Length: 241
Length: 206
Image: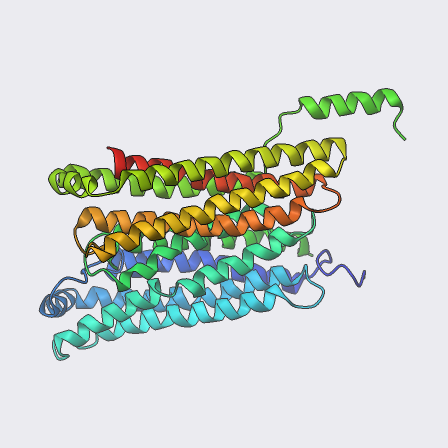
């Protein structure tokens, strides 16, 4: 085996683990569509930051069963981000001698997964006893969920950046992912940025229920998951034994 | 070893082959960013339709000369970048050094136009805020500050890109990979310019 070339050998165990990682991404998007979009009221948002606390408590109580079931799907979806993160880092690692960007990717991916899992916890918790909690507690839990998801820009944009850089720095033919994936990551990183604005607006397009601060980052993110899932599955092909 | 005939004919076909500046990836990025900004432009236009009176009054209170100056600065920057890229391209094709080093000066001047843009915008915002006008004042100013702010974020990234391009252009020998990097970075700067022109029209002119 050529010692300086870590990325072209057949490795069936690697191939199978990467298949798992790639398909985890697809599963994550599917579970989010069921849990966050159809059942859970996360996207489109059931509420708005300028609704009253009483309205928060009322709407959540009204849809409490759907939100609870949705939360179960959400926690599965977000937990699978970890598998996606590992797959991306593993593919990057194949093209490194000593670990470099792959380690950065693991750190950012782990942080992103932890943040996402907290989103699901918060979503579940608010539906636990919405008629017993002080309505302001229900409001805080939803604010918390959206802040975790949207305000965490440096984590998710940073993750995109440390995926893009090793691709752009690589020599021709030695890239862990195709070069267009690097540019897609840079685009996604920029699109998450409006999430920081939710701190400054409680209504309108820059609030956590708004087009610019909610829909654009979420859409970009789930497209990103699909692109990276494809990248992992494609990258695994060369290791197929 | 190519014979003189095949060397000449392959060089000729290289010149006639259509050359996409930069690489596919940067154009995908540009298309994506334009798509998102188009959403912004539509939102501004919708706001204008909804609250025409508020928008007209607020627009009148903007200093047109600041907007025009900013437009001129970015257009000059783009022109400098384009001539710098052309110089680098010639340098790669002819293999001569001095031409490319003049490109470094042009990149430096383009960086200067970008810095002046940032200074001018800060001045404009400072004046507005000193008069108590903030993103919370009304919807026009909310859109104004946030969308020109997002554009400013792109300008800052663009300045970083130009600094990197200047460094690449100062290398002893420019190869086709360096040219690709330079063209990609220049394409991003032209995007920044294009986005400003539309924002300028929507906020200051219409």
